[in-house]
Length: 527
Ligand code: DMJ
Picture (cartoon, rainbow, N blue to C red):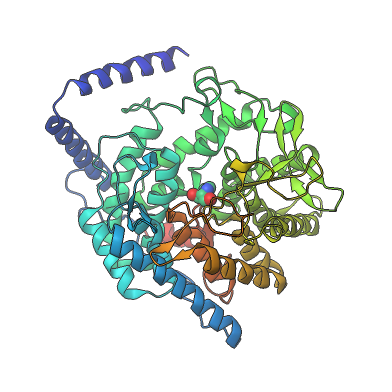
């Protein structure tokens, strides 16, 4: 506690000093810090060329796949690529270089999640452009990144969003495309390194603050628990273990804490180290924490035993306390509020179907089949949540109480903002079972997106999916290009495109390579 207090005081002192500086002085300091970081990452003054990774680039497996053999599947996949072209071309035309597009008003859209960092759609879309073989577009996106992407900003950002979209997006683009952009991407990552240490770990040199609404100044489970995949790769590429160490420490603290009924509350107070309100959710505020436990284990080529144990223990507790079956036979994941269940499931929670199926293979006590089954049941429920609306697109949250099942009852839960989670689950279920219904359900979503979300200027979210007429929200979210369209494309691709034996997807659908033990050993021996 004393150390934390001293660190806070130091951060406050530094903040005060910073506030007294002129903007040019702040920019100069940032530049100097950055140069120092670059130098440290290179291993001292004279080592290596600027920004080059320490590791040799390995040709990725399955960065580009074969054409689907079935003509209908081929044609459907072609249609999804055309959707990507429509989204991209309109972003390019009306909002180039800005974070997102307003497809109705045909101008840029800025959200405060990224501070004044710009270009979220470009960075989020890089890898989708690459795997869809949109070569020209990838080239122009890459050039924009080289010339314009600037983390040299003095602003408040969401660590979570910038990590999953920008750091994840740049890492994937690097791992997929290699040589071409290696030098620059590595520079960007080193940029991100520095500022991530600033933002995520205030005890080092920056200032961090929590969301004012989060249970008494608490930090949020899905935010501090969704850094592992990216940070492990930052350490892997730079040779600097500090990034992985930091995030593994977060995990250790969580592992040691007492958990109510084995569940992880969404809020943790960073000063007291105690849980805040005992709210548990596999949707917003909790979701990707569970996802990253599983995927960290998979990404480590199944070496990360701590991640594995925490994941399967958590799933056990979720099954016991949160998963329920409705009287109509739909399996859903409720929210837990201090022991009481709220029988509501968010669109965000629908990702869990894919997660259960992906983790099925390693499930303890012969539960592989059971976890696949759980994934299939969640997929079915989420499909119902789409099917029971007029527009065949799912609401933000749906309920299983007051006589309804899989239907949104509150006006403020009826919107659809181009989210990917249901399609993500179809993609995992398809890859892992090859049951054709998942492609059919995915195609239903394509038809609904085309009918209701496509407008002249791109794709827009919908304010009420139970209405017969669209009321557009006028935002083309960057995750529509990075996730929704990518998962659809993968659903209609052969399994050789980004095969699961070689890649894991971060929570924004950016593929990161599995760090195979054999490759690591080979590299060690070659040194
Ligand atoms: C994405 O940014 C990520 O999938 C995140 O984990 C949750 N929400 C959005 C999309 O819905």
